[in-house]
Amino acid sequence: MFYFSPRPRDLFAEFGRIQSEMQQALETSSSIRGFARNGFPALNVGGTPFSVEVYAFVPGLAPESIEVQLERGVLTLMGERKGITQNPEQGITVHMAERFNGGFRRVVTLPEDIDPNSVEAKYRDGVLHVSMRRREEAQPRRISIQ
Amino acid sequence: MNDKTAVQKNSESAQNDVALIPPVDVLEDASGITLYADLPGVPKENLSLQIDADTLTIAGEIAVEMPEGVQASHAEVSLPRYRRTFNLSKELDSTKVNAEFNNGVLKLSIPKAAHAQPRKIEIKVA
Image 1 (cartoon, rainbow over the protein chains, first blue to last red):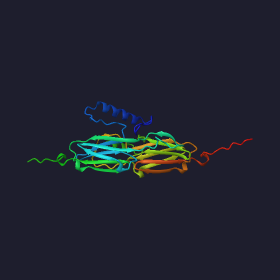
Image 2 (spheres, rainbow over the protein chains, first blue to last red):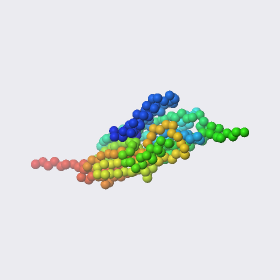
Image 3 (cartoon, rainbow over the protein chains, first blue to last red):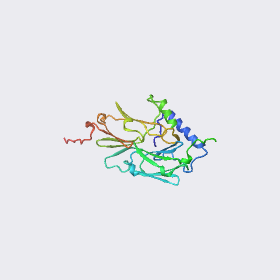
Image 4 (cartoon, chains in turn purple, cyan):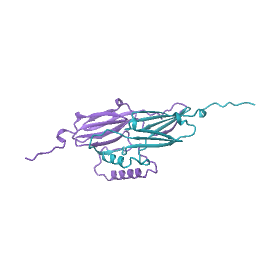
C-alpha cells in the first residue's frame, strides 16, 4: 500500500482510482517501460512548452544518497531506503509496517527535445524535483509572415 | 498541474474531503509507541497533528514548487493532501507526545503513562 488505499468511506477516491485504471486499460500509446503504480518512489511527471518536470516522492532520504542519471533520453533514479521494521531489536513489537524499504530504481523515458546539459535537481521536504529544459529549437515560437 | 489546483479549490473548507493515506510504521517497546509516517512534499508549517480524546489525526497539505503553466502527464500522487486517523489506547500518555519532522518523514513518540509502564509484581509467599 502506498498512498492509494482510501478508507471505505472515501468513495470518491475509490471512483477516481477505478476511473484511472480504466483509462490506463484503454490507453493506446502506453510507454514501453510502463509506469508501475505503487512503485517507490511515486512519480509525478509534467511539462511546459519550455521544460519537462519530474517529481519523485522520496521521503526520508538524504539528497546525496539518491543517484540521478540521465543517459540517452532516459532518466534513472536509484537509491536505497533502510527500513526500521525488518530486524527489530529485542523487546520491540512491530504493529504496522507499510513504509517502503530496500533498494529502488525507477526509470522515466524523456521526450527527445530535452537538452541534457540543462538538468537541475533539487530536494525539498522529501521530494526530488528534476527539471530539464527543452532544446531551444523545439520551443514554441512565432513565425512571422513575410 | 491543473487538476490538482482544481481539487484544492473545490474542497478547501471540507474536513471530510478526500485525502491520500500516508503509509506508516508503528513500533512498540516497554516505554511507548513510535510511529513513522511518510508525508513527502509537506513543509513543516503545513503539517497538523491533533489529539482529541483518544483519536490522533495526522494531516498535511502538499506544497511543491511548480513552474507556471505546468501540465501533468502522469501523476501517482494525485491529491494535494494526506490524512490518517488512529485510535490511541488508554495507557498512552497523549500529553507527552514528541514529534520530529524531517525530509517528509514524521516521527511521533507517544509514551505510556507512568502507571502503565511495565513493573514486576512481587509474589508474596504466605
